[in-house]
Length: 118
Image (cartoon, rainbow, N blue to C red; front, top):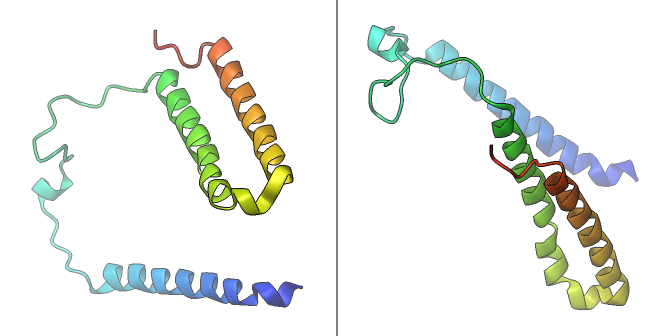
């Protein structure tokens, strides 16, 4: 059974090797001309208009995690929509169960106030 995944393992090793090789070559062969202008923070092509001011609110992180969570879960709908007729009633019920779990998580986040910006 594991021999079926040997090609994937070789591909991962090859990709990691090529990536590591490119990073190593750019570090060793690339030009190194330090410049004070290169060391300055860069913000949309302009000089920064203020210094970084500590930590962000937890709401930023919570909103980001909720977005990623629900966005990744929504990606499961595309393959299901493509194969919906072939999956039949069982596939439909499986997706309805998945949707129920997704909506339960959404309702929980809503009730806990994770979607309110104060």
